[in-house]
Image (cartoon, rainbow, N blue to C red; front, side, top):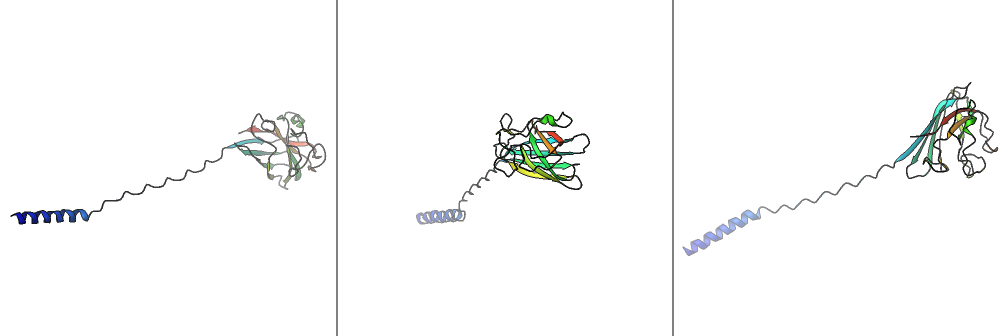
Length: 194
């Protein structure tokens, strides 16, 4: 009986071990790597001016400005319609006032540094010197450029918010002082923050 008992215990042990041996402990699944956080989109500050025409002209359009909230260059995009064909001077002027019939209420070119007039590629130029926009025979034209001489941050000396954009009747020669001999003002718009 003692041999049978030992045999029974051995058989049961083998059965138990065989049952356990067939089931391996499941290894825990590795934790999924976290998704990398998307870089936040840079906040942008915007401003724009809608142009009105001087009596006798049909100018319309807009000039839009965009800058990173962190600072840096301002992107300028102008879209003009109803203007005379040819190369027309486009500038930011010091006062946001289009009330005078000839738009002289907008003052002179925006020039906080007190430097000579120039073209947008010149190292020394008025902050408001945007150069010329080419107007086609259909009266429309576009211009895109950037400037590091202006900002959209209100309260700063170089801020253009609250100033005016002027479209001139003539071509800015990019050198004559103080305005590039661009002629009369045919379109004006006050720059408002977005």
